[in-house]
Image (cartoon, rainbow, N blue to C red; front, top):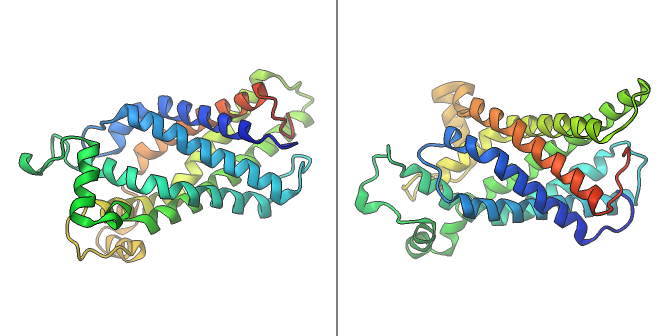
Length: 275
């Protein structure tokens, strides 16, 4: 990106988050156990989180690469910028996902007694703090930080490289750039970025869910020990539980996010290389 776009990067990220929720929400009921409730809170939360991660990534990358880089991806700027953005939002995601996971575990097909069920997300959060303390709401925080830092680094690296090479191929083929081709490039780069991201971090997500939903207080919170136990019991397949639905959701949701992000950036006057 060129110039100091400031708040505009965050606004563009906000629209990307909205697009991601709208596109990915129908797949959530397939990916997770039980009925996914709280669509409104998810909508608002994802928009805010996306605004932060896209904004932080854009601003930090611009700072690290010292301005325009002629379009060629620079890993020394991309990776730390994306990881930093992921680390920041992990502090927001951890408590919200803990509530979300616990609400899902008590779905209609759950063996959780009705007397022990949460009446809603707010009650779940309040009871967690009451019985587990303020640190209880951040249970699984280290694993969430790892997942978000690594996942965003993989996502943005894949996105930047795929985008760069697709534009080069179109240029070499003397294909005139248009709004339609930009959308096509956005779909492919965003979708493949999403697949790469979740392929890399799904085992951490599996471990995080166990950490956040297991009632035993003595349950280890070390994601690598949990994954080691899962691997010994169920092999690699166990570590990638839910891979199919996750990948099916990842492509359209992230493609929609990137296309919306890039279109919003153009409307806001944010100049990007290769545009």
